[in-house]
Image (cartoon, rainbow, N blue to C red):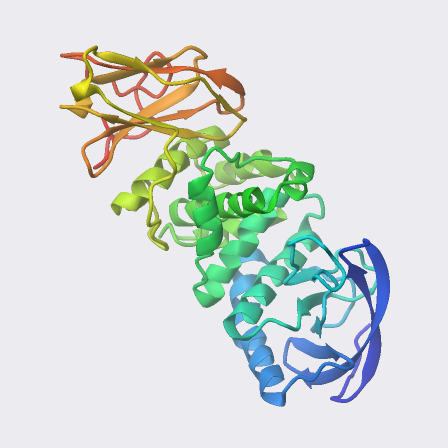
Length: 397
C-alpha cells in the first residue's frame, strides 16, 4: 500500500547487521519526499536539509529516469510509487567488525520490510553517495525481474548504472582486474562472496567491463536503432548468467554466442590501453595500463628461435597475456599443450601479445612461442584457426 508521509514522520525499518548476519530494527525519520522517493535518516544522525534535497533531486531527475530507461522499472513489493531511501550507520565497520570489508549500501531483496527500499551508509558524501544509490537501485530493479540472477551479471549492471548516471568509471576495480587479469568473469555466487578483498575488486572490475562491452557493441551505446533496451531485456531474461546473455543476443538477431563475445572482450581488455575503439577497446572509459602479463620474452635476442613459458593454471572464462619481443610480430607462431583458445595481437611497442583462455575448460598449460620466417599464423585456437572478426589495427591478421 502507499503511504502519505510528511517530513518529521517516523517509522521503523528492518536492517541487516553485516557482521552477525542478523536483523535489527532502526528507527528513522522522514526528512524529505521527492517525486519518486522518500528519504529517511536513522535517529541520532543529523542530515542537513540541503543534503536530503540534493539526494532527492539526484534520484528524481537522474537516477530514476536513467536507470529505469536502461534496466526497466521495478515490479515492486508494494503499491507505493516511491522508493524508500534510508541513510543509516550500516553495521560493518571496526566498531562491529574486525575485517576490512565495508558496505556502502544495499537493497532489501528479502521483502521483510514489505516495501521497495535502499539502505545507504550515512558516512558517504556527494557523488559517492549518489553513485551508490544508482548502484543499489539497479540491484532492486534487477532483483524484481530476476531474483536468481548471477551476481557477476547484476553487479556489472550496477557498476554500469554508476557510469551512466554520474560518469563513475570504477577505476579502482578496473585496476584490480588489470592487476589480476586471470580472474574469471564467470563465477558462482559463492566464489564471488568468499573472495579476498583484491580478488573481489577484480570481480567487480571484470563484470563492469563486461556489461560496458555489451552496451557499446550490442546495446544502448552501440548505435543500433532499437537497441536502447538491450540491457532491459537482459535484466528481464530469467535464464541465468551466460544463457541469458546468449539468448538476449539471439533476440536481437546476433549470431554470436557468449563464447564469441568473450573472445573479443579479452582482446579489448588488452588493446584499450593502446587507445583502440570498439570492438577492440572501449569508448566510454580508458584503461590506462595493460593487464598484468603472465610472461615476457624477447625472441630477437634469443640464441634459439622458440621459448616455452612456465606452466600456468587458468580457471574457466579467464585469460592470460604473454608479451613477445620480436623483429616482426607477424613471424611469431604459438602453440599450447592443452588446446586452449589463443589469439595474437600487436601492442603499441610492436610486441606480439598472445592471449590465452581455456574458455569453458580449465587447468594447467604451457605456451610455446617461436619466430619463424614465413609464418603469418594469427589463429584463435591452439593450432591457429582464423580469428573471429576481420583484422583491425592492433590485431594480427
